Image 1 (cartoon, helix red, strand yellow):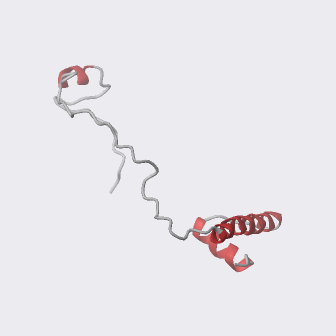
Image 2 (cartoon, rainbow, N blue to C red):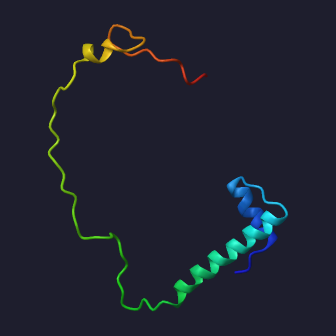
Image 3 (cartoon, rainbow, N blue to C red):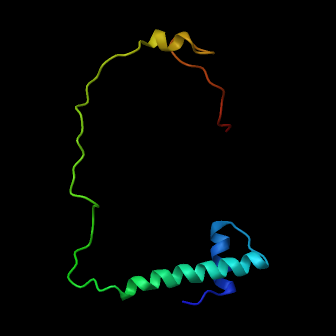
Length: 96
């Protein structure tokens, strides 16, 4: 695949980036190097090799989910800068 100015323009538009002058030439060279490196993967003989789904056969050692109360609601609200009777009060972040 040949890296052209049109391809760089399309990719830079999708990425919301701008390349001009020397930076455009450098990014074209970088894209060409990346594609050449990826093209080497086509030369690897993968006949008879199953696709890899997971990196290891290990399973996660999960703990039981145990409900316990470490802090009460009143203790949590004790140090709140602003609070209502049962809730934290925070500044409005979404304006409609």
